[in-house]
Length: 132
Image (cartoon, rainbow, N blue to C red; front, side, top):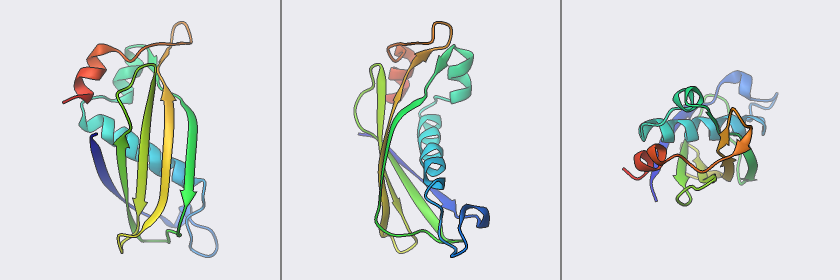
């Protein structure tokens, strides 16, 4: 399936006293990868929300292999796992400057109708953009 890769420079505030990225920041890195993947497909969270659709995370898994450190540029590779229905799933690899895998991850999100607060199928206009 389709994938995208973005660079992220580790900021000082994302690290602990040892200069290592705090584990909680990886969720932000995944979100950055996911939102950029969608944006490059022509889908923005902003526009989805204007159209009455929310996309909350319902599951997240991270497996840590190595540490990212302050001022290092890491790459977040985001890949759509399968064609979305009510849920959309992504796989991720985060690599360091030596191109070593430091984190593998996955997220599952669900399309929610903002008016009814109920799950809904992925709208056709979004499916069309994802398949381009």
